Amino acid sequence: MLEKHVVRQLTAYCHHELTLTESSRVQQHLEVCEPCRREHEHIRVAVDLASQIRLRSAPDSLWEGVVQALDRSPTALPGESTSPARLGWPRWAVALATLLLVSLLGTSWYYWRLNRPSWEVARLEGKPKVGWSAIGATGRIAVGDWLETDQSSRALISVGDIGEVEVDPNTRVRMVRSRETEHRLRLAQGTLHVTISAPPRYFVVDTPSAVATDLGCMYTLEVDHAGVGRLYVTFGWVAFELNGRESFVPADATCETRPSVGPGTPHYEDAPAELIASLARFDFENGGTPELAVVLSNARKEDAFTLWHLLARTAGEARSHVYDHLAILVPAPDGVTRDGVLRLDRNMLDLWWNALGLDDASWWRIWKGPIPQGPQ
Amino acid sequence: MVVRKSLETVQLQREMADGVKSAVAELKPKLRIAIVLKYFDDLSYQEIASVLGCSVGTVASRLNRGHRLLARKLARFRNTMTAGD
Image 1 (cartoon, chains in turn blue, green):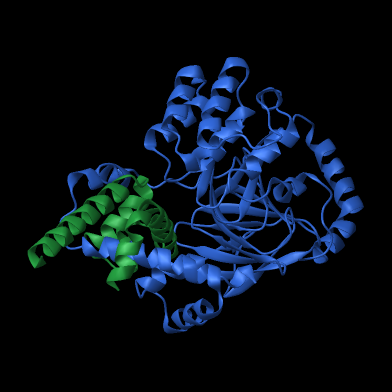
Image 2 (cartoon, chains in turn purple, cyan):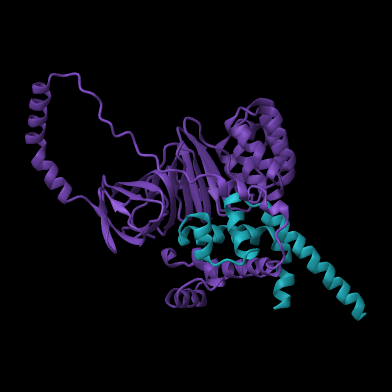
């Protein structure tokens, strides 16, 4: 089961920072899980390489930005505006309306509340709260409840039997829905680490600037105080969507999303810095042709999926330029014509996607189709 | 022959050290801080958490992401490291 994978513990495992029990669980899992073992080998090499230079003093270039970031005051958890709207009605009318409302809805609300679907929450550190109450070692979050962590608390939500969500400090997240085929959270602010083992679309997170739909994977989702979201995918795929603007983000890639704009163009985290900077300006600051040119000229072969996304985000001559650069990186396969791609023919785009060496497009296209029934 | 081999080794080690430094320098500040504190200051996860004012879990998460990225960026040294095991 994917939720038992140990990918997120591997670095701590290599650094001997796990407890004996955790370390033993990781070790046992590595003996039977090929993907985690492969990942462990990669992490091990990175740890070994970094360890070789550990005792030399850090060059100034490495500290660039570090001191600034340390000096920056921690982001305060902004409280939502709780001041009630001033009522313009006379007091007696307000009281009467309230009384009526309470008498009509009170009982049904009470029973609804008792029977709300809920998930288990475990306290990892500090004093995470569900609603107004701090939870003990474990607690439950029900539909409509907010889970909140302060600067020193963390929690782990068990999402039914399909996976788990680790909640970082300074996070506000609400349970929105729990059905057999739909498990939904709303992340107002903070960071979630998601591990899900279920068919595509069974797990969804709403954010202020996009909807993250799980396509069978492991990922981290952050939302800052301004509603800007960032998605980092570790395993599998995540679809990021707002008002028809969608991005498909594979493992080791990231995607930013901003309120009223929606998801930007996804890119690998290790893409050239110039490409990343220009892509952000193109997506969110009307960067236009000059920024697009920088993106195209800096794209490596593995950045072809970024260019593929740009086909639908450009028009006219700009789209032609994207086509030409993409065709150099990954030649258009049989059945794909320049005219068809410039018309954004869905079948041709899918065929070209399949030639990128990532998963077959038909696999993740199903997130737009009927919800598959039953677990995998 | 021996001298040549050791020169190659030195050259390779220098290349790897430069590669690691560049790869770390290219990380986002949040990930870079954690890596620098871990390797250049030799701090434990708990100590890094205290310095950064965050939880140990957050440190572990950032270090894990940082190492995943380093592994991708330093993939060219993988065979060398494995051969040296």
